[in-house]
Image (cartoon, rainbow, N blue to C red; front, top):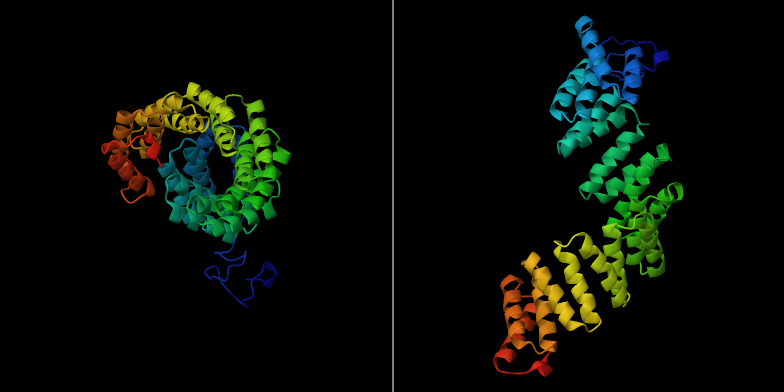
Length: 360
């Protein structure tokens, strides 16, 4: 091949593997006229016209890899990922050097939870097109979801470098930093998204949690309150704010928020449990006992609900209920846990007739 085309070999034929654009194995990311037309259909949601055009093209030109590729794209849009894979495979068989083929096949593998092949395909897409920020972003998400946090941060950072307006990669990189307990840098990434989209409640929720982890309670509360201004019934934000109130020693506010959560989903055991803790903190022990009872009824495997109920029953001198709750707790708890040792000690004391003044 001619050196003007990038080949450094003095003479090579169509079968060489030097990788230049003029060789049979060279990289080619130019979009054909057919593919441009299909993309125009795709961007306007005209998938039926894509299928019709691909069928017609393949009838006259069965070696057109782009026709297989776009037929695969339509199958993926319809969530028919196995069909999509078959068409992407055929496209790659015919033209093995197009980044977009590997990128889309990687996404189909990802949707089928075939993580290994998805990562391999995104890597091939990047090999054929080092500027393919979408493949970096997608591979980064796979790494993040599989707790390969350093790899995730590297890929998402590269995606951001190539496409600084990719807010999704900022959000995902923030999650990776938060998973590594690097909350300050996570806050910076979430802040990038919020700066661009001030009403993005998902980013506000994540940043609020990161602030809370750093003990920056005022900043956390500001984010939670902003979410609830935008979405008054955002149950996740209410529940997290309630937990923050509890951590700040504000049980009245916590009770109010947990009550709102319970009203929205009365069959969820968790808000009853945490409202019980808040009720106990405000010395409303009978109310706490009621909440722990309800929590344990909805989720009998929550051993701590029984333990906390027993403690409150002892304070209220409801000895029989305390004994039953301790026994229920021991049936579910790790027998080596400190709470289990405490429960056995209390049961022994209660069986001997010691009153609640002996409670430790």
